[in-house]
Amino acid sequence: MKKHRIVFVAGLLVASTHFCIGQDLSPRQIPSLVLNSFKQGFPKAYDIEWEMNGNQYNVEFETGMFTDHEIWYDTTGKIIRHEEDISRDQLPTQVIAKLDKDFKGFQTDDIQRITTQSGIEYSLELDSNTQEWKIILNQKGEIITQITD
Image (cartoon, rainbow, N blue to C red; front, side, top):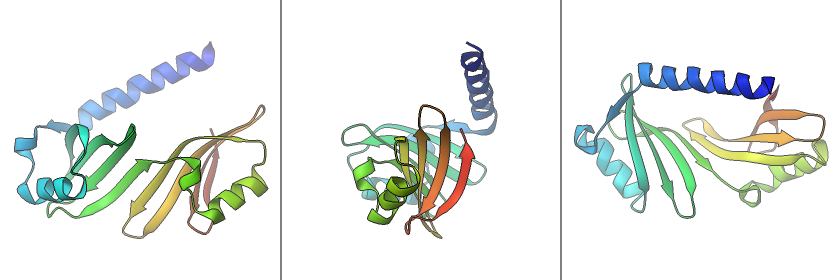
């Protein structure tokens, strides 16, 4: 019960921060360079929500079978960061090998591919009966970050 209260309060804080920091935008408020880049890259996107954070345009949307995406664009329409939900079988073989070796018996959840200008990383939540981890790995299967979840 205590964990549920903490999650609820954390959710309220995140939601209030979201509304204080980001500014929701309609497609008419998005510069044509950004909007055209988005439409060319993701012509089948739906459930689209735009927001502005500082000088970056953030869009959350879905494609295909409920695949969530979140992208940050600069003012010229260049992608700065792209987070997308993926399944375990879409992970590189080196990442899967690392999980099978070091986290045998753990269930994977909330798997995301994160693409930035410096490369691709994979974020996952791992759960067992006794431990929960949030980890980020590079394409070679090397752990970049590992924190208790």
